[in-house]
Length: 565
Image (tube, rainbow, N blue to C red):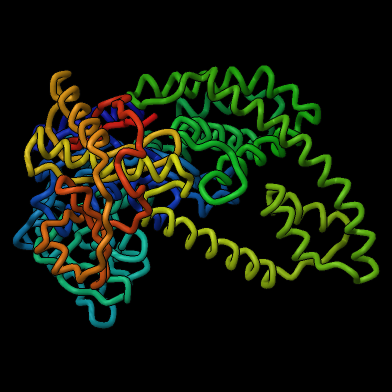
């Protein structure tokens, strides 16, 4: 059974149980600064485990591309991947954690044994044995035994999942094994972990099941690695002259880069942008192993990239046309050539200085990594070749300090909702408030914000609504915003407690965390919102408002992109 067939079987089975087909979330997570990329199918649903009444449906399935950047250095072996697909089925709002576990385990068992025709003897489960104040998962054990399964038991590290980021839903997570290979995890969200690491029971339990599609398909075919099945086998064979590890690395990283660039991330020096830069650098270094002139990048890599893009476009993913992706990669090849030429010159000078004990190897690696974007493994290898010793502990400390600074900066940007504080960005931020108030006036007061992003080029507002807006509705919304701009309304900020603000009628962003003391921005008598600012002093400074695009963001969530000029 190949990947396409497994994906189809999963979809048909769970839709038949009453699940609703959901859209995969974007690879770049929205309104979640705790991670650089989407790492799990449940990430977009995290709030629904604490507020199930806000979920667009009580049972949803997705096929979600996810990025796992922690194991990039291991890619090329039989098991590690940078980006892969997860089949996920999710349920929200269980009054009973036992009923959730019954549904989860029985649905999984039927899917595996009846839909995929797996012999029961080939399946095994590993469940949570308990840890400290968290009791063992005896409910799951009893349900599995009723199905004829005698589960193994492990500690928290293996069989208790979550939360995603610093806080959120979590719970025991039975692991599913096929022929001794882990193919899926059944996360039983019956707890919530707060930022201080304390765990409490959720009022409503929720289910999060994920299967690694590629690994499941390979194991069903009796293969020990995804690199032994199509399309991955065929893709690696396109790289003539490459050794096995280099071919796997190039295919894996190129696939990930295609998805990342399609998500709107350009290669850069910091944070999220550094990931595609690092992946491409590793592709270039792997290519040098069998093609020092990089000639394969002009022919083989172009053909390979086009093949990968076509495959995932046919699977239903929204990707950039390959020619656009290829253009970005070509620019990065040119940049990388200049970087490596400079690196070789600086390496020569550093090695000479280091022999006299006048330079820090760790500082050299760190600066090449953070300022120039040279992969750490490349610098490490060059230093080893030149017999320069490296204090790995000191280097790790430097990098961790740098990453902590980057994370805190990302959180600060997220909290304000702004990419920067340029004048035009501030105008778009104020306009964002007017747009939300206008939508509530046209569509009703049930409309609330579900996400935002504000730059100097445009503003983006996500809101709950279950259909496409009509041209007449969009025209009316735009007219209201422009009317309020023309009225030159004052923008006033007041400090008060959160309770006073809500009593005052101020809107709070869904899912956002607020302290006891908050800022409330009022625009005339038209808009009142809890917000950290900044804003213009009067709406007359904004300019003319226009809606650029209205589209679906995810199930039950619409998105408007707009600007003032």
